[in-house]
Structures are given as C-alpha cells and as structure tokens.
Image 1 (cartoon, rainbow, N blue to C red):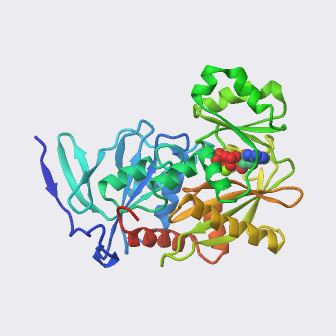
Image 2 (image 1 turned 30 degrees about the horizontal axis):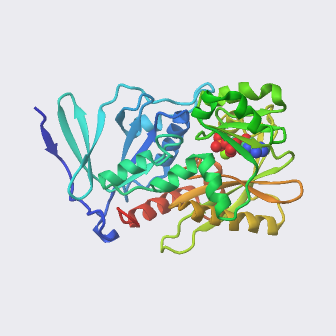
Image 3 (image 1 turned 135 degrees about the horizontal axis):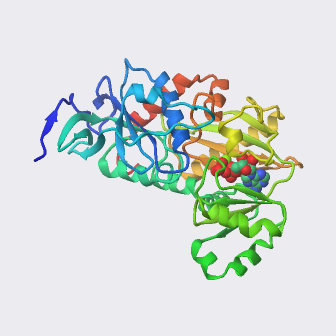
Length: 390
Ligand SMILES: Nc1ncnc2c1ncn2[C@@H]1O[C@H](COP(=O)(O)OP(=O)(O)O)[C@@H](O)[C@H]1O
Ligand SMILES: [Mg+2]
C-alpha cells in the first residue's frame, strides 16, 4: 500500500494572480535529461543554484538521469556537478524517485521511498534548465501544461519550433527574416532514396554544414568541403537525430548573438547587447569543444565590436525572431553577418547555454542585468504568467 504523508505548506493557486503564490514560492529546478546535452545542463543547475536567492525561494532540485528517471537532487549533489579532468558531470542513478502529482490546484512534488510516497508539497514554478530534445523541444513543457505547473520560458509550440531547425527556418522566412539556403532530409526520404537526397543537396554551394535537425551544442555537426564527405556527414548527423538539415555555409561570415527577454508587463520583448564569437578552432566553426571546454579556442566579445547599425539590426531581428516563434521568457538569437554586411538568422535557442559564463548571461550582464538578477527576473516572469492557454 502507498502511504502519503504531507509536509506541504499552503498551496498557491495556479491561474490566480501573482499574489496567490506563497510568499516563499517553491521553485523546482529541473536539469540533466536524456539528450546529449545532459552534462551541460548539470553545469547550468550548479551555476543557477549558486545565485538563486534561498531566502526568497524554496528551491528543490529535480534531476533527470541519462536513462530518463526523475530523481530528487539536493543542494549538495547539485553543487558537486562540475567539469572534472575535461569530463562533463553526470547524474548518478542511485537517488530517490521524484514524482509529480496533479492536484486540483496545480502540481505537488513527492519523493518515492520504497513503496511509500513522502509528499514535499506544491511546486509553484518549474525552472527547466534542460537542453535539447525532451527538454527544450516542447515535450516537458507539455507535461507541465498537463500538470498545471507554472514554468519558466517558451511554451509547447515555441519550444518545438525552436528545437527543429527545419520548422524554425519556415517560421523565420514566413516572418520576413532572412535565412540561408538549406535542404532537409527526413528519415523516410533517406531510407527511400539516398541518391535523390544527395541530388537535392547538389543545389547548394560548398562548404556545407550538415546538422541533426533537432540538435544543440554543435553535437553531430560537420563542415563538409566537397561531395566526397557528404554521405558520411549525413550518417554522422543521423546518429544524433534521424532528421538532418544541410545548410549552405557562410564563408568568412562573423557570428553574432543576442539575448531576448520577455517583458514582465506583457510589452515588447527586450534585446540585450550583441556579442561576437571569434573562433580559432581546428574544425573552423563554433564546435562543442569551443563551447564548453578549452577557452583558448574562442574569443567572446561582449559587446561585439560592430558598427551600431549592425548591432541595432541584430537586436531588432532578434526580437522579431522571438515573436515570430511565439517565445516567452527568454531566448538567444544567433546570426551571421556576411562579408557584404548582410545579417542572416542562424537559429533561436529557447533554452540557451545558461551557466554564469555562457553567452546569454554574459550579454545580459553587459546590458546591466547581472546573473543573479537575470535568474530572479526569469523566476518572476514565470510566476507572473498564468497557466493554461495564454
Ligand atoms: N550555414 C553556416 N555557415 C557557417 N557556419 C555555420 C553554419 N551553420 C553552422 N555553422 C557553425 O556551426 C556552429 C553550430 O551550428 P548551429 O546551427 O548553431 O548548431 P547548434 O544548434 O548545435 O548550436 C555555428 O555556431 C557556426 O559556427
Ligand atoms: Mg548554435
């Protein structure tokens, strides 16, 4: 028999205005996950936990292990997640199960200890720090919607569109935002007729970037200089996602990024200072190593040393991209500036890298919003937001 003991404080009522939320709301920080960005998400959780105001918020950690189990992660476990000997951290499987229970007013968190459930009380806000599929792609956002849990960031559709580079490009181009030439190969198309897929790619000019359509952190991406490397690069990308996107490379383009935050009063989203990534990587692009491991391979200029009209253009289009996709909370928009000074949108990330040293927090810091205040702002935005259709 399952025994439920409650140690819960009074619940806030989802759907009610902010003043219905308890004075010290419980924030569930959700991190780890089954995607290839598990380790990066663990680093983010440690970083966020260091700055979250424990007097204002009652923070509880929910780790998702590589196998997909939800476990309770205490502050000590989270604090211990860091890079060791060049290896990203990973959650172990030995912690107790975390269980989210739908209540009449929202969701409660419980911990399973053998055959009994100990209730930890209501979750006022889920702060998901998951990257990649099953985290950043609308799936967990759908779960939160079903559970009546308020959460930080983009909703189901915006998350799904922001994760899928194919649909993202369709939305951008329909909104008048400039994108580069590309070809998508679905798993069915590849299995049906590989030669026809390779023919379709022949319309593009090399070098090409071959990517998992729903990847992140540059994992599974190859730069291909000529036809001889194409099929192998497609197979490599398919190891990360059966759906692959192939883009024409922007040779000699500069790579800029811009942070966008939702407005707490429901007004126009705001854009941060623009930053530039300057690479000296062997692969010639902003690859996984450069993103998370040795620092020497990349220079991050925050703010970017670009003419003001370029920075303004990037900011304006970053806000337009945010609205085109229907984002909420936060997003990072990445662009290329071509040699003839044209701005082209590369992608939007609805859960951008979010450690203290990541570009998104750094751009906001340079815009006058330090990391701890940024975390607080996102929590407030999430708590203010009604559940259900918005
Ligand atoms: N079309 C392109 N032209 C030039 N460089 C590219 C292109 N697409 C990707 N890159 C390089 O590869 C990196 C990763 O690609 P991106 O699409 O941003 O994937 P991810 O979602 O994994 O971050 C970019 O930051 C950039 O350095
Ligand atoms: Mg990117």
